[in-house]
Image 1 (cartoon, rainbow, N blue to C red):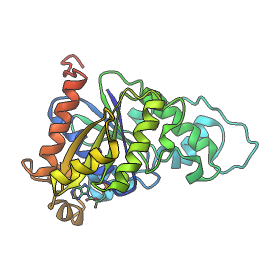
Image 2 (cartoon, helix red, strand yellow):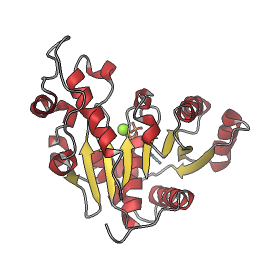
Image 3 (tube, rainbow, N blue to C red):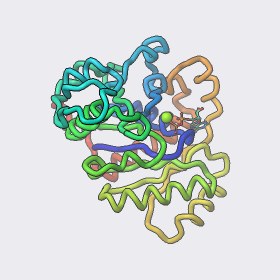
Length: 271
Ligand SMILES: Nc1ncnc2c1ncn2[C@@H]1O[C@H](COP(=O)(O)OP(=O)(O)O)[C@@H](O)[C@H]1O
Ligand SMILES: [Mg+2]
């Protein structure tokens, strides 16, 4: 099961990706969480202690690794020959951070060339790694993506079974999601769920969703506004420190339950 969490900056992608990773783990699944933000912060949301989270070097920023695997250092300029098919199959083991018994995290770094400048070998390594990680068997893979739509590059998008498009309950935010859902279906991502986040008024949120998505057959899931998140973040803690019966963890657990039903996911006891 491979899913990508998308949406505009600040809507709650990282928070939901982290909470979902814990929800799957609590149900017994092994989870591989991948952070592809150019300013990664999934580690912290997952509950990796601040100092450790801060010291993680994204694969695409690890210049020695990029050079070792592609044959060129990032920023060497145009015209340098480098491998587009670097060896990546050992990177989860070598660079994965063990968040808990069931959750591993790899901080990949950005795969968006426009954000990274001409760091082509680094982008090539990050993309090759992602393509490899999306072939993982026996794990739930959750990719926390960067704001925007660059994640939908050919050769990657179609490897996802599900896009979770996070939106705030406003017409503007919902319109961005509509566009992303349309792109996802053009790119053969099997299914999309619009996750309406930070909801204080259920009825109003659903009304905005219906107005924007009209008659389209798109599933939505509501996650309520979680007042405890401010405290958690002030202390540099992860979402695992939220009250288990609080709104965020309950609503995300429901989402996890729905995904398990949709895709008939069962924990395999032999892995
Ligand atoms: N359900 C929620 N209730 C309250 N605040 C939320 C909720 N989801 C996210 N937030 C807050 O919104 C801000 C942005 O969240 P984040 O997950 O970093 O977004 P993104 O990854 O999309 O940029 C954070 O301060 C986070 O605490
Ligand atoms: Mg984020």
